[in-house]
Image 1 (cartoon, rainbow, N blue to C red):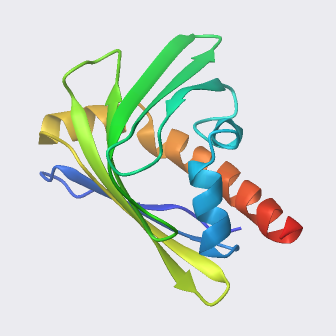
Image 2 (cartoon, one colour; image 1 turned 60 degrees about the vertical axis):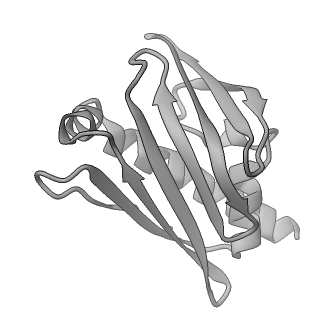
Image 3 (cartoon, one colour; image 1 turned 120 degrees about the vertical axis):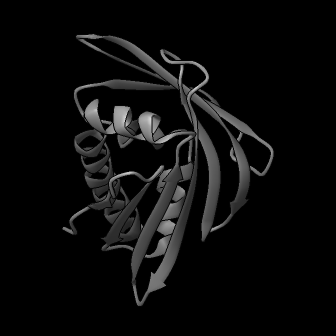
Length: 159
């Protein structure tokens, strides 16, 4: 399985996340955008995810409800661009800290049967970005992307 890499440079407002999935990008894109599949990979496995809204199209919106032993953590955003199977541009906001919105551009590049994933997430401030990192963003994102890798490989196997 590939490893998720994060580029978090001091003093910058962005995080770059990269990974190679051992599945074609159509399978990765489907796993990322099918509302029935999202709960199988979104976030850490210790949490239950319910898709409240998933209008996955340019101009659509989303809201995911995440709950675990330590409470409920809900997130929402807007899709600025959805171009299958290569690009998703969306906002991301944790409802527990309203007003701290980030913009993420995720690209999926065909790598000869595998998929090169690259997400650039831009925060409103360095402080917002650093707070997200301090809250365990790397660990949670890496675990979610591990689960996405497993799901995409399963979808590829099934055809």
